[in-house]
Structures are given as structure tokens and as C-alpha cells.
Length: 166
Image (cartoon, rainbow, N blue to C red; front, side, top):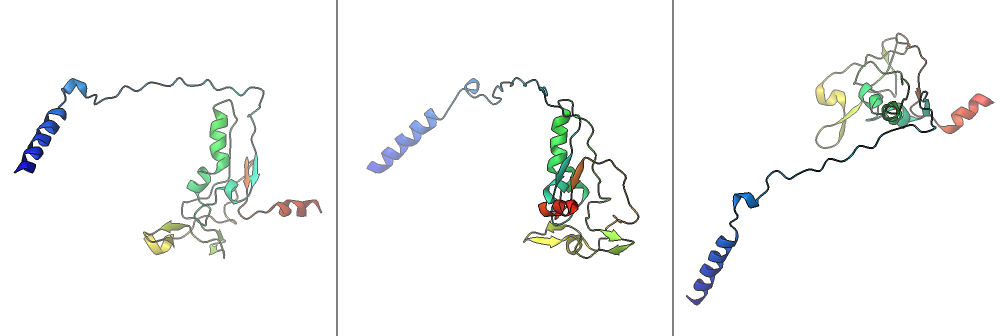
């Protein structure tokens, strides 16, 4: 009985201290707008930007090369920022689809398989998740013409450039 009295007193104090007037609660906090910094190129010339590199430069993701991966490549992201300070146009050869894979005269090239996706337990081939898929990028039928600003080649190594000099 003695302990019950202390429980009631505690509950009463809690009930009275938990109450607030509606104007004490600010449901919409005031957000201070940040001043945007004015962008300028300074003495740098961003009118032409060319990128050389390997898989990261090309936009190789999920074990394949496909449009969305290429659009999210580091050089393409940089070119959008360079455009804010007067950068020129940036063009890159894009695949035909978001499936990945590569054909030569209608025949699937070995090692150029469709992309991987997450199936809930780990990476799986796109065809295993959604059914039969067929790449549409054919290196014999589709020869885009340049000039291109993104010269990323998946799997390129630095010594490949030296082979051209010998």
C-alpha cells in the first residue's frame, strides 16, 4: 500500500509535466535558406573535356556496360558540373539498351554477358530474374561516329597504351 501511493504520485507528476500548450510545439521548424555560391571557371577552360580510362571511366557496372551505367559514369557526371561554368558538349558512345551484353553479327560474344541484378540473396544474371533477355548492341551493325569525349574502355590497362608506341 505504501508503494502504491508513490506510483500514483509519480504518474500525476508525469501527466502534468508532459502537457504542453499547442503554441509551445513547433511542428514546422523554420529552415534557413543557404546562400548559393556563384560559380565561375576562373582561368580554367572547360570548353573541351576528354576522359581516358578503364571500366570506371566507361561506366562499367553490374558486370556489364549499359546505358544507365554509362550515364552515371564519372566523366559524364563531371561534364554536367563543368557545364555549370561554361563547359562544352560531352558525347560518349552509348549502348543500345539497359540489358548489357554485346553481339557480333547477331551472335552473343563470349565474356560480354547481360548485367547482374540483385535477386534478394545476391547477384544474379538478369535473365535468371526476369526471363529470357537478348542484347541489342551489335558491334558490326552499330558503329557510332564520333568525335567522342569519353574514351573509357572496360578492362584497359596502362601498358595497353604503351603497346601503341612500339
